[in-house]
Image 1 (tube, rainbow, N blue to C red):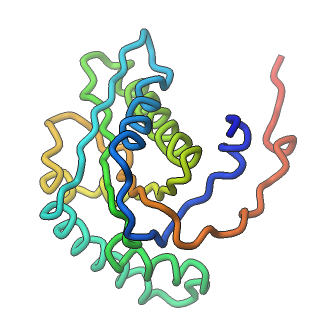
Image 2 (cartoon, rainbow, N blue to C red; image 1 turned 135 degrees about the vertical axis):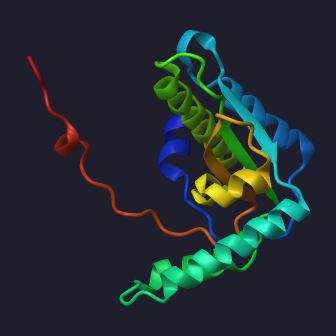
Length: 187
């Protein structure tokens, strides 16, 4: 799969098969993260593999948040179904990892480190997709209670909580704006 096919073909997966992901595929996903661009090749990211106990505590937190969201009027049905799937054990994803941005040691790193760690997370999602593994990028890892559950080092930032697994359901491509509407030129 070429890179443009991976970028355009990748979907956010919210329902996974229970099949385990082979270690060599997981290794490729982590290695892809290491090739993300970073300022001065700083590679300011870390990964936390989420084990069963931490997963259960995160899930409890997610379930409460999803219940709160679903109680709001007017939740569109596709979003509702996605939330219900995530509420049911992160869609059944067999593997979860938190992507962290290292604590900044100088002011510019407060901007650069999260940017670089985000690129690493995206590389992971694209590498997974190229191997037939789906992912969903969850923001729950950034919630303050998650820091304790994930044992996030002081000053580090949770960029993403990524759930990986073989897709059970692959949604159709969502509509995208024409890129030309997002470009402006300055002189």
